[in-house]
Image (cartoon, rainbow over all chains, first blue to last red; front, side):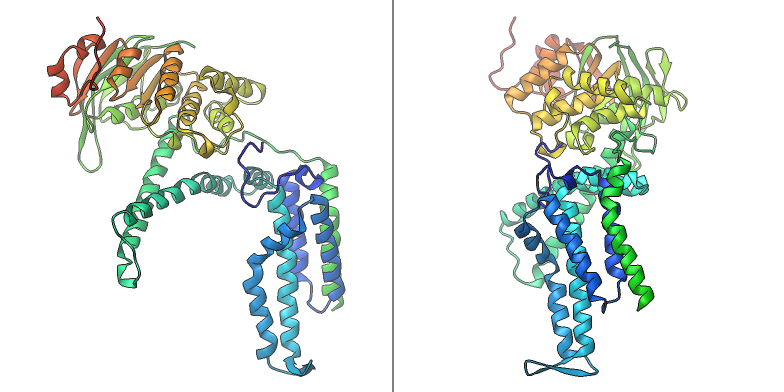
Length: 254
Length: 245
């Protein structure tokens, strides 16, 4: 593993989180995210607990804080949207440093920011400690239908090829003086996209022939099985399950 | 590894758009022979290759691998015995790592565990690429991809290997390594190529296909000494190339 095939979001390391079987990590993340999502927004203490769990995991995975923060930039659009809500929200107004803000809007903003940040942090830890191929194996181990994992696998394998094909096509266009500035010049881009689709389709057919000629009968063979020890399941799921328990408790109480 | 004979009789195939790709191909290749399959673009060489292990099913004619005729019943065993190395290694390397790709064929044959690992290791070793196992296909060089693609086919332990333009896109050293690898393999080989020096070095016998038929069948040396024959089928000896006596 790891010989020059890490993806851009992967942080190379040997932490206990890196060492966990991918299916265990996937399951833990799903449970954690469900807990975060169903928790009523006014239960601030619960979000505090989730934040502690998330930060502990980041520390345990030895993923640099700066890395997590930079990747969190992906949710900035949602946060900007959330920040806007208290200003335009209706209902009861409260005075904050001389600005009148909607109470309902503030809660809505808090809800979005807290849940998005926690969910994204958990996903960042997962992706920073798991190779794509392992992720696919983890999905298989969790009984995700093989058709879906195969499609994802092929996408990972051929995306780079298709992107480089697109790059070459663009280069071929610009080398012949194509420099689009106006919408009316978009036609070659559209035909290029069409050509790329046809090429990818034809490649798909050739790959299928290559698979058939090596005895493919419609079912992908399982070549590498990832096994998880009961101890690792307990270790990884303990905190997410506690979080889920808290979330359910909060739901019942509120 | 054992090698097997191949017989093709009166093979016809046309594409759905109506183009006749094979128009009565006859070819007999003895066990362990290496034959260069030459001919202009569009002659039907690749189509023939795809017919040989049943990816395309011919409308007429028959194919015999050893004593076994290719039919619906024998399709699985013929696919194991006839290995196809595609022109673009990217079409052949579709798994996340080279080792998994090499394991794909034998795993389809039902191998698993230590036996499968052993098969993968020896196939990679056979092409002198033992170190490539854990690598990701899209990070390999052109030459490495080619060797990995050949290993994926060798792992099936085929008796006949059909290679579609194996030398294309390789740098001179990569081409030399490829020739060395192919000549070390103890299987019947059909090498589709436009590269006449490669054909001469690798294959004692040459067959020219044109317009869906086998037109010429003689020794590679004799073919290279027949400029008229070469010209008729759009083949050319590279400039400056002199045939040693």
